Amino acid sequence: MTEPFAIEARDLTRRFGNFTAVDRITFNVRVGEVFGFLGANGAGKTTAIRMLTGLLAPTSGQAKVAGHDVYREAERIKRDIGYMSQRFSLYDDLTVRENIRLYGGIYDLSGQEIRDRTALMLGRLGLEHAADQFVRAIPLGWRQKLAFSVALLHQPSVVFLDEPTSGVDPITRRQFWELIYDAAARGTTVLVTTHYLDEAEYCDRISIMVAGRIGALGTPRELKQKFSADSIDEVFVRLARPDVHPPASPSERQG
Amino acid sequence: MTPGSRGVIEVDGVTKRFGDRIALDAVSLAVAPAELFGLIGPDGAGKTTLLRILATLMVPDRGQAFVLGRNVVADLWTLRPRIGYMPGRFSLYPDLSVDENLRFFASVFGTTIAREYRQIAPIYRQLEPFRDRRAAELSGGMKQKLALCCALVHRPELLLLDEPTTGVDAVSRREFWDLLGQLKASGMTVLVSTPYMDEANRCDRIALIQSGRFLAIDTPHAIAASFGRPLLAVRTADRYRALLAMREWPHTSAVYPFGETIHFVDARAEAPPDQIAAELLAFLLSRGFSDASVAPAVPTVEDTFVARMGAPSGERAA
Image 1 (cartoon, rainbow over the protein chains, first blue to last red):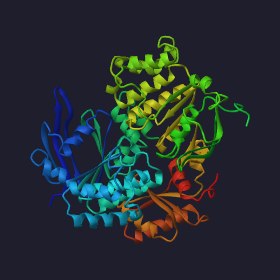
Image 2 (cartoon, rainbow over the protein chains, first blue to last red):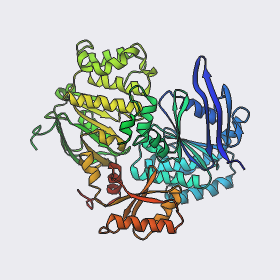
Image 3 (cartoon, chains in turn green, yellow):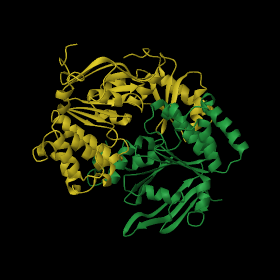
Image 4 (cartoon, one colour):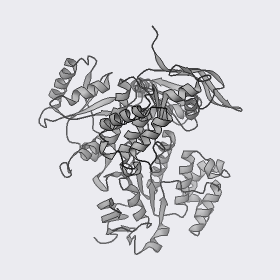
């Protein structure tokens, strides 16, 4: 039996005119894995994500997300994935309940399903008391946790998170990561993009894109060992700017 | 307090409210000349409010603030030209080119790029290849460098930077902090805010800020060391189930995800770390985490932040 993959990309490529934004990337994400998808500005991360979320057709190569082909089944992919961005996720001038109902409607859930899942979600988050408050009135940390739960409302098999814990306090951040781990333990695959590389260390595996290609892929521990680095931040800087930050020489490595 | 007796910045019991929300709650702070000082805390903690008060853009409800020996309210007009302020939101004119933005900010303060070239040269040289490009078309890192250049062009004595590295990639962030280090070395006083704990170590001293109050003010090293309890890091492939299991262990005081590991603090203040580690490992093995390992961990600024946020105020005063 082959291992089930939630995301499979083979030589996935996207060109814009003469510019190759994504250059034959190949990687798999396992079902229930928390996968960090990293890269500097302009490395091709956003283009790759747009292809994997069914928003942009590839130039060549193959990819399947949640079992659906990115060329022929882009609409199915959009239904089977969730998406949460730090910048925009919930409508501030709708109440918590109205936001949930709106998203449930967009994903064609029945009135009964929306009611049941709203109750379950608010209970799990301990937010029952805030159900009829405007989203702008609830603290940022709660908003982030709510946004994540709303992204899971239609029970997607893969959820894409863009800088999910940016700007939250360290306790809320940890509660947020526990929500991510909980979702992964229930079989949801989580793909996280972030500029904040200490966030990458919470992922099971990470990939780092450099100039359209995948420059490194592995567990945070493997990558730190491979690059003789103390942190993913260091690994990243060495990969992205080898001219400025050369790898440690063999003698330094023994230290 | 004698105005200007000690620091470039002296904040004494400053309070600011917006409606019924308290943004700053009687905070006090002193920043020394040529210090690189970090205000570290989440969104909504009060960082921007404090920076705006120091930049003479907002008036405190209570308390006083002095910058370069002058009162930020009474001496606004003589003080403003001596401060460089880089707001958190993109502060440039997106339709103007790099050079046009810079010329504009120079002219507002009655100077020119040519006259200030020496001051801005280290940063401006990195922007020069793009001098005719519209600011809107710069990368995130380049925009921040241009904004820094614009904040420096009138040769201020103090630089106030509100989250200059938010949304910027790791390489550009590192370069930006290197520039701040160079400015500090040239004698500039810099107050910079960030929500990112891992940037704390680039500062001489930091204030941890949460809900309008300072949780701690000290060097990053001293703040990390003030954690004051044995801290253990647990590794296992099944992090999440291990975390839930550890919550049920009777000796657990705090347990939370920390990067690749789980950080653990024991409730027994007197127990030696070796004993705690051995007992915790035995517990994890008994729960079926056969790959688990437990090792002492060095507390970070973030661990201290977590501990102080969780503790009732005063309980863990340094």
